[in-house]
Length: 151
Image 1 (tube, rainbow, N blue to C red):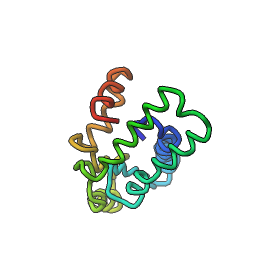
Image 2: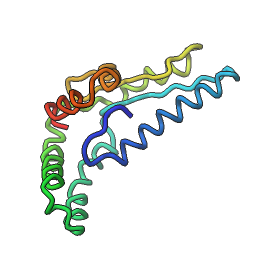
Image 3: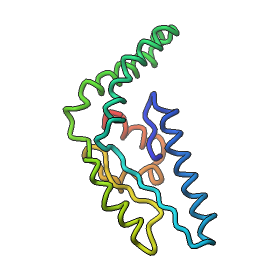
Image 4: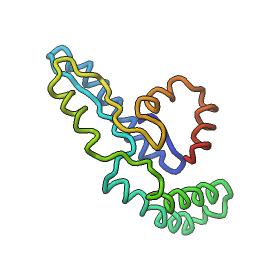
């Protein structure tokens, strides 16, 4: 996990947990000459990506039921997510799932695999840049960049 989008904190936290698990296992198992690599696929064409688009109407319904759409910040976030969902297939942001094949083979076959393999980017941003940015940019700059890119 590198980037947290509004209305996806729980999902993003699971990605951060996988990062921590991979780091911990890599350090614990190195004594047994076992390597652990993390493949960071980014925005990959998948059933999961398609399902993410379809969740937005359910999200609106749930928030309406709780009376939370009356709160301006929440209403704005939901409307933004709805716009993103409508434009989901129009933007060239998705990387084919096959893009991860080479890095998985590298991790398996290499005697000294990398700890992390960022494989796909998001739109015009390559995976390696997305992997580096959160560590280098102050939060307010990263937040502004995400808003500019439509996150």
